[in-house]
Amino acid sequence: MATDSETAAPRTTPKIRPHPTQNEALVFEKSSPGKRAYKMPPLDVPAVDAAALLGSACRETPAELPELSEIEIIRHFTRLSTWNYAIDLGMYPLGSCTMKYNPRVNEVVARIEGLAEAHPYRPESHAQGALEVIDLLQRCLLAITGMDAITLQPAAGAHGEFTGILLTRAWHESQGNPRRKILIPDSAHGTNPATAAICGYAVENIKSNGDGCIDLEALARQADSETAALMLTNPSTLGVFEHQIHKIADILHERGALLYMDGANMNALVGKVRPGDFGVDVMHLNLHKTFSTPHGGGGPGSGPVACKAFLEPFLPIPVLTRTQVNPGAPGPVSGTWDQNPSVSFSWNYNRPQSIGRVRAFYGNMGMFIRALAYILANGPDGLRQTTEDAVLNANYIRKKLEGFYDLPYRTPSMHEVVFSDKLQAAHGVKTGDIAKRLIDYGFHPYTVSFPLIVHGALMIEPTESESLEELDLFIEAMRSIARECQETPDLVKNAPHSTRVSRLDEVQAARKPVLRWRPAK
Ligand SMILES: *Cc1c(COP(=O)(O)O)cnc(C)c1O
Image 1 (spheres, rainbow, N blue to C red):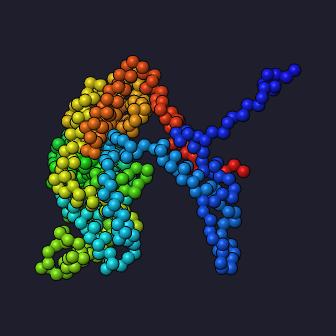
Image 2: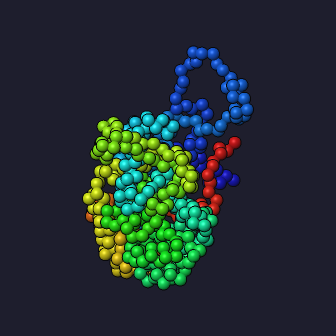
Image 3: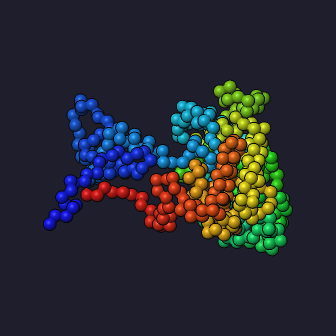
């Protein structure tokens, strides 16, 4: 006997184009043989056998590339782009990352043909304008940091740390002993111990005190004649200013050790204080954090390293040299090289004590241009205002969320504020759950579970870019989530509810990433 399902009319699933917010197939899955996004005109020269021409360089089987029409490709990638959160959509309160807005004028300047198309192999005599950009940026950064010499070569903050510790090592070696260990506070960014280790140093942890600052007695005990340096982030990753920084420098210097400053948090210092004045010997800057150039998704970044004069001989080659051709003429600061041919720039490779190159060519030029545009557009007063606004915004959030979230360190906040999930954990809700619920409210999550010295950390950095209205929206969202944690904790624990996919297996994603996809045969 026929069952109902056999006699019923076959159920066909109607073919419906997926809504842009729904799952998008891979381009490989969308591929159909023979489709093209463009057509070449018919050959008007004799055909040549490419395989014969290329010999062994020619692959045996053609690459399995997806075949689609132009509109299909455009729609595919445009739909994908709408899944992304971006600074152009809303606030990005990631602490430690300084996700400040990158003004559009930076992009206009970076695209000026003479700069964007400048080739690194161009002769120096044809690249004087580009070299002046580098020179001017170097001098701005030295003025901001109060240091004596600088290299723009490193391609990111971590790369800058690597370069700075190589300088430290080279200097100690020149003194007869590279030394053995580097001290790193327990609040440090993970790249600090990684840098020390890759430069051949043992890492020794140093405890923070109740204020979240370096414990001076512990430092005096631990720093000895085998200590190469202390790597310190100031303000720390708790957003706390090391107010005894000069004493920290003294303790290190008395023992022949150097003070390395991780400058990732310079957004709280620019225009107010200069690391060169409080005893720092060597430091890196993150142009892509403090000086507004875009970052995320793997770069490009820029991590200049500034140092005191005694480390200058060890800087990576080449070093930019400025020569006053006509000593009587005014300097180039007020005009371009074209207007002032009395100054010329050249690269100096003849530096016997240099640690060598750390990167091809001269660094990420596009980032230099954006950073310089940002610095010049703001000017000294504008940069100081930026710092003050960043600190004000963080403290506004701190004040408005106090009581709703636990504040483990009562020390005044600088440009970022760190809460813990202690109050919410009582209802079984963790910092990661709150962060995911924030997505439903239209915000990018804050930094989760970092710094490690705060259990269940919520680390928030609004930056100076955000208006009072946006800050209030964020605060209202955070307060509302705090209420949900008490009243409907499951709602928060299962968030996000508004996204295409909800909770992914993050461990699996990290351990077994699917990086390639091959079409099924
Ligand atoms: C971002 C950051 C770094 C690393 O900088 P990258 O440019 O990401 O390599 C190092 N230390 C601190 C405190 C940071 O916030």
